[in-house]
Image (cartoon, rainbow, N blue to C red; front, side, top):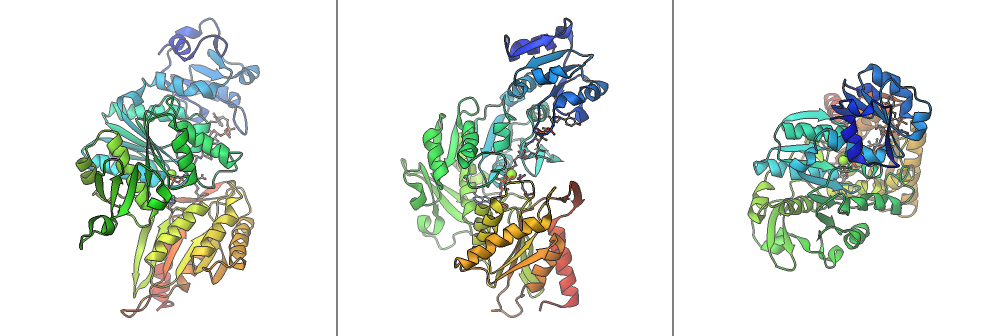
Length: 524
Ligand SMILES: CC(=O)N[C@H]1[C@@H](OP(=O)(O)OP(=O)(O)OC[C@H]2O[C@@H](n3ccc(=O)[nH]c3=O)[C@H](O)[C@@H]2O)O[C@H](CO)[C@@H](O)[C@@H]1O[C@H](C)C(=O)N[C@@H](C)C(=O)N[C@H](CCC(=O)O)C(=O)O
Ligand SMILES: Nc1ncnc2c1ncn2[C@@H]1O[C@H](COP(=O)(O)OP(=O)(O)OP(=O)(O)O)[C@@H](O)[C@H]1O
Ligand SMILES: N[C@H](CCC[C@H](N)C(=O)O)C(=O)O
Ligand SMILES: [Mg+2]
């Protein structure tokens, strides 16, 4: 579209003005905020960043074919550009509208489902997407693991893409005639306005607990970022899990029609829907594993569902997904049928080895917050006949406060805690491990019933090998089998150490360690 039309649509007057007399006649066919991904015909958004100003890269962008630049007054100050420049006081605040306009408002032609919350976004997104597929819809997915456009899969860099990439992806989804897009909406995305220009048909809230306090000033600010999804600017309806106090607060503050859900009577108070164990609700003898009922209190109507993934928290994720489907118009029987199909969620409670005479049970999971560590270990405890051995670390250049809290959660729930490196990024790995260990030791000093051993396992592959070597395997009928769970990296295929991403996959590391131990006959 013409730059003139673009600037007219995104606002006139003080905040947006075109510099240069010929500005209006330029044809803009795409938009990006990264000079390294400029394509000919793009508008390059030169944004002020946390580290530097994008205006520095205008020459690169123009050399790559950018036909116009959007920046702020600071950017304009050090800019000499041969292409027209649009100036906005806060360019991030108009970028969503710009990108939506350039790519033809693709979200309006898709059923949009947005999921936020500290833990459970990825899992719930896969649950909704898999059910919509089972229902016969053509679907897209955007989240931490990957972007899926029908059957095409693109590995993700971030959970929620920048507005420029988001609208381009949604444009592709429209072009390929998809019906719906299910996506994770991170708090960073809400704060940095990455999802501007999208109004979700239904927005989901999973839970809130400590994370990202390097980015948000406080839990209240973190909550406020999440809560902004539940306003008419961003969504038309909502499903909120009220198992925690933040969910209960959100249910009272959301300004769009909201349905609430609780996974127990105790947590639920007056939630609209309550999940109940199927045994109690149905009293049948052949109750399927993971089966539960979701009952609407006001009408008594019931959805019969199965949580295909272990752990009580996955009842919450499954129930949220089911209510999202109901919210976008599926009939209750269609919801039940669609959700009976087991989804494939990579790196979440993924069983790499089922355990037995040949080795311990080994599970890989993405828990990287104190609450998730607690939830994941509690879930595995229920199904472990022997000891629960947890391998975990914490990411560098991220919320430091969660490190000891993760260690403490692990020490409370696991029998053995092997502390290792996650993605140290620019930090000293040993210091991060020390913080996790300190939290674990303190929990034990305070009387945590769990860990008998807390080990500094060093680098990740040796820590995994050590945990597996420690595990006892079942040889006789009654011999208990230990579970080794490797937490924190789930689906990730690399480990970032001092700025370099090295190939690393927990699932491969587990398999390699199992093979080594089995061949040497150490654990039997
Ligand atoms: C804190 C944060 O989110 N920062 C984002 C922000 O970076 P920044 O402001 O530091 O960028 P900068 O380095 O100062 O550069 C300024 C501008 O120059 C541009 N630039 C820079 C270099 C160049 O050669 N050319 C160029 O055009 C950059 O694209 C940027 O627009 O803008 C960048 C450009 O879009 C993002 O890549 C970057 O995300 C970083 C990589 C990041 O790690 N973000 C994480 C924390 C994140 O967003 N996580 C959430 C939550 C995860 C979850 O809980 O699931 C997520 O949604 O993934
Ligand atoms: N509803 C939940 N409540 C508590 N913990 C959960 C819940 N769902 C998942 N988890 C735990 O949190 C981990 C991360 O889950 P998931 O990847 O679905 O969350 P996410 O919100 O997408 O996380 P991220 O923001 O890092 O992408 C899981 O591996 C599991 O251990
Ligand atoms: N989206 C999360 C992922 C964390 C994954 C964990 N492996 C780590 O590196 O801390 C983040 O960027 O904080
Ligand atoms: Mg995620």
